[in-house]
Length: 269
Length: 176
Image (cartoon, rainbow over all chains, first blue to last red; front, side):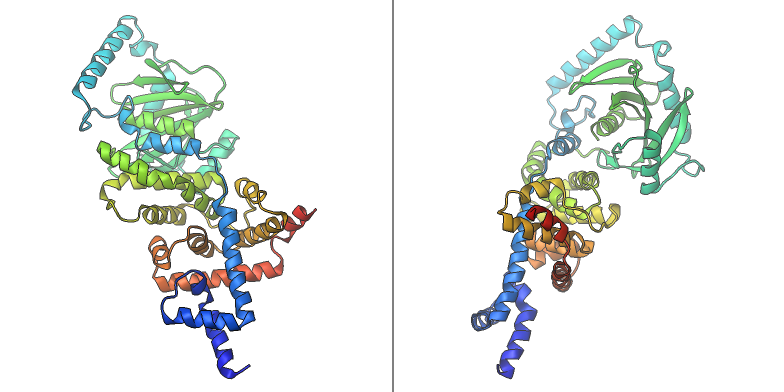
């Protein structure tokens, strides 16, 4: 084997990866091809790279993941957002007629419920008022000692308290992110309180506790995808709730679309 | 607070961005600690993409753009894992191979999962997603030279692990 040939082997080995990935252009490619024709050892090296590449690609690329639930959650948070019942109404292009019809239906429904005595705060579960009050007084007090703020500490606190593996939404509605968590008492019942913050300083709360009883009544009941939601409006806050895998979920935010989006996100997690 | 995109932009998001969901999830599944963490990362990626969709230049490479967001999300949120066993979906796929290929695929996958996260990332982009070095450099936010050196190290490391017999137990289980 000549000295030149050894040098060619070294140079070839340096460039084999590029050659296998079709990233070599021009003269080096033809020189490599010529060398590979003559040198069985370099051909073997190339085959190893190509075979690893093929195996990795076919083992990973054809793995069939069930993405149905994930896709539904993403679509709900993105392209389907506008069709959601509580979306903001000043959406460009939303037909005026459907707006008017929607408003009439909502006013009619509201009046009906009011005259049947369901709308007054007197009949509202005190749990929701306690959640609203806790959100109002505690969610922005970020420096209080009982908060945990790191991702791992929040996950640990959640799994210790809930005694089950429940996925917590890390973010929702594009700009709300989970920032802290604590344990709290609402009407003598222990809850995990999670706070989400948007860049503009708005906050939303998610309260979770293990729960096997009935869903406490709110002012309005809504069924969405076979899931029952209880919706409540206090003077300045929306409090929504549902039950998911033996857990009671309550969300609180000043914007009712935010409270409902967080609730749906948590329920589908 | 909520992005209000036009009907056309929504349609574009559905046809250009959501079609890459499977690719993003399979990449995230090989880089995160668990399937749940991977799904969270993908969901966050789409929420970020939705937020900035009006700034995305139509006609440019949406797949690379999404992968770039995903890799940033993973870098910030997922702790780098080592030695994750071959997950159910990948295992089910490998079972479709011929017996000899099954053994080889298990060995390669086990060795792959022992690589450092940055080495797995570059191999995923080049070998699995068939991206060019330039595209991978954009996704990873590094120069092309860094992609080349990482890829070289990843391949060397993968080979070393295979020579040391990683994945041997899985392969033996299949043989039996």
